[in-house]
Length: 157
Image (cartoon, rainbow, N blue to C red; front, side, top):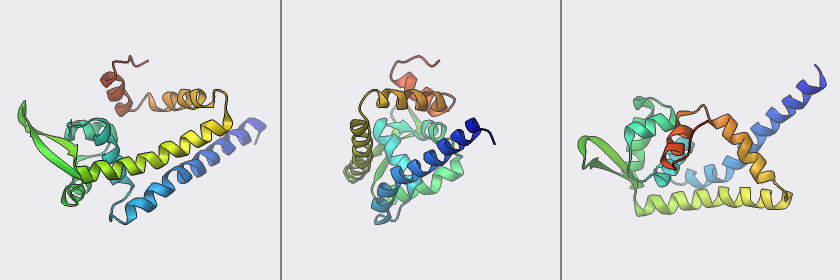
């Protein structure tokens, strides 16, 4: 194994361990609600796009209807989300967070934002911009990234 490959393996290991650290605290927080990381992702994206349709959420999460059905139902039953038929077409369901859902999502995202803020502040320089550059390159092939670029009026490269 050459030096470049060893260095890239180190990057992969660090990425794995970093992700575990990034998700650990929110995972512990949601356990008491009887939900899992998939539920957290759903809450996160509904919070970013209130009124998102189920079909758009399927595209963003890149999951099947069957895979999304049970977590959505559980969030609904726990009064964390509400589903409303779209005014423009009753065949579409729009998703919103309830007050309880907003509170939980806010707490979960706050923990992760603070974690990233602390890291970037401790490193100084342009580490945040470099991180964003790397994540943009990784994310640009994902349908969800394109959705958010369109929502924000940005062009996808």
